[in-house]
Length: 186
Image (cartoon, rainbow, N blue to C red; front, top):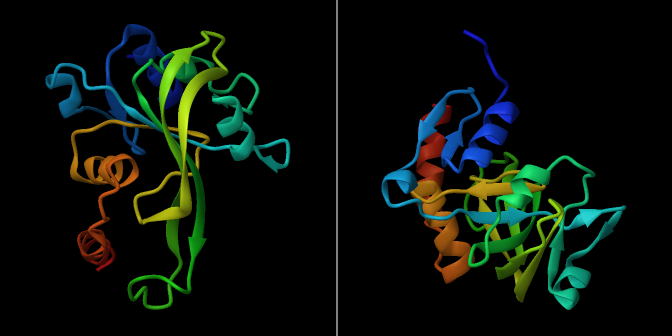
């Protein structure tokens, strides 16, 4: 049996429209969204390329554009009008956190703007977006991702909570995440 890389499998599933969650271990897990009639993903995207933050330009022009050459062509083509999208930044922090991190670094996802995709330009690089800036940047902890395009599917508590935080302005249940991380780390 031929083994395919995670990237190859993701491209195949994007072409076929099959919604999957490809885990770090390389196994594929069907998500609840597939059984829920194909619920659409939410997109968390970066805006830093050419050594400059493009957030203000994207908001002003009503677009989002991937800046990594041909790396995300298939993923961007899979974005649809009506999908929710957020401009994010990812970093770590050790101090000034709203909880006791026991002196350890914590991953942070900063939400800088949220919007709705209004049109896919079908070039694999750009989508039109109705943006709303988030002032100040809203910070989400623990469940983060550094990739330029993060496709978040509903159907598990972490994803559902992140989507609600970003797009419905709900508060993050930090205790729940903190407790799970402590259980995992022993």
